[in-house]
Length: 486
Image (cartoon, rainbow, N blue to C red; front, side, top):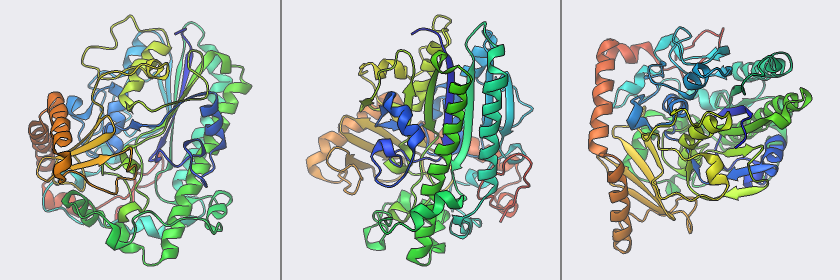
C-alpha cells in the first residue's frame, strides 16, 4: 500500500447491525453509509472484549486481552506496553487523539504526540466494583439507564459536539503542518453509549415512528436461562427499571437517535477532511469498541458474548481498498493494528511481531482468508467466570470456565436463539471448537490469572466493603464533569 495519512473514527458501544449500510430498516447513518459505499464493510467483526477498557487496551496494543492483562474496567491501559501510537510517534509520525481514550491518566505516556480533550477513567481507578468476581453486588446506578432515556442533551452529547469541533479545527489548521510523514488522527466519540439521551431532532423521528420495534426476545418467557447471563442480569439489573413498554420505547429511541447523532458528528469530521483538501491523501476507518444489548433478551449494556454486544461495525476506505465490497470473513479489532502500521508506510520496522494475532484489514478486504481462530473474551464486571467466544466456520462457540458452554449456528440462527451445545448431534462440532480454543489458550489458566490480579487490586483498594461503599458510577464523566456515584 502507498503510505497515506489515516483518520480513525471510533464510537462507543455501537452495535454492528444498527446502521443503514448494515441493513437496519430504521436507523439512519447516511454519512457512514457513504463511507461504506466507497470502501469495504466487514460483516463479521468482533471486539476483543465486550467492555470499554479491555477493548481499548487491545485496540492500542494489537493483542488479545489474555496477552496483555488489562482484564476489566478497573484495569486501564497505562502505556506500559507498546501501542501503535508509541511506535509511530517514535518513527517520526504525528499521532493525535481527540476524545475518549479511557486510559488510566493524562500523566501516563500512552504514545500520542498530542491528546486533545481526552476522557480517562475516573480517579485513575475506573470501575472498582468490577474487581468483585463472586457474590456479585447489585449495581446501584442501574436506574440511570431507564431514567435518563429520552429527548434532550447530556454531558455525552455535549462532549461529542466538542470532539467533532476540535477534529474539524485540527484538520483545517494543523494537519498540513505535518508533511514529512503521514499523520494519524484518532477521533473517539462517546455516543451511542448511554445515557440514552438523544437530541430531539434525532430522537423523535424514531419515537414517533409506529414501526419502532420492541427488542427481540424481550418477553421473560423468551429470555435465555444460562447462569452466565443470569449473573450479569442480576448484577446489572437495568431491566428492573423498565416498567412499561413506553419506557423501553424511550430507551430504544434514545439509542437509535444517538446512532444518528454520532453519524452526524462523524460526517462533520469527514467533510472537514474533504474541505481541507486532504481526502485523497487519507484513508478512513470507522469502528466501535463493542456493542450494546439494548433490551434484547432482557439485557442492557454490554458484557456478554452475544453478537449484539461482541459484534462491532468496521468500515475502511481509501487508496488500495476495494469500493462497495462486503467481507464476511471473521475479523477482529486486533486486525486494525497491522493495517495502521502498513497504512503510514512503517511495515518494515518490526512494529508487528509474531505474537500480534491480527491480519491487516487491507489484506482481508482484498480477499485473503487466513486460517486462524478469532477470539472475544470477557473477565470483568457482572461475571463470576471467564468467558471465551470463537468462530469455527459457521459456528460460534462460547466457553465458560465454570458453566456449560454455548454453541450457535450463525448461518441458520444469526440471532443466537437456539443453543446447540447440549444437542448430541453437534457433539463433534462442540469438541472441535473447544480444541481450537485450547490451541490458543488455557481457559482455566487465563481465568486464574485474571482473578489473581483482580483480588490483588481489590485488596489494594481496601477490600470488598470499601469498593461497594465507593459506589457505582454508571458511566464515566467527560473532562470537566464531576463524577456522580449512585
